[in-house]
Length: 67
Image 1 (cartoon, rainbow, N blue to C red):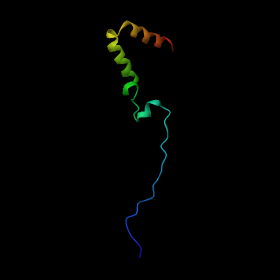
Image 2: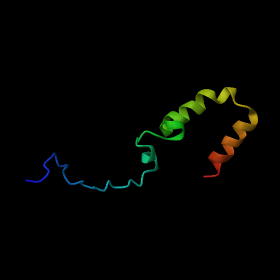
Image 3: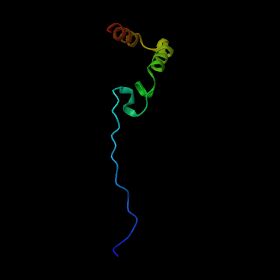
């Protein structure tokens, strides 16, 4: 009788499909800029808009118009 012991089951390598959604890179679908959703990012900009410097407001407006 040879050495007997607990044998580990064979390692099963399964492939997880790669999502084409960039928000899943960190493992969560709600991740956007700073880990928040696009809607919450927009809400943050709206809340902070009065406190933003005029040049920052102008830059955001230019980016929005460029699309």
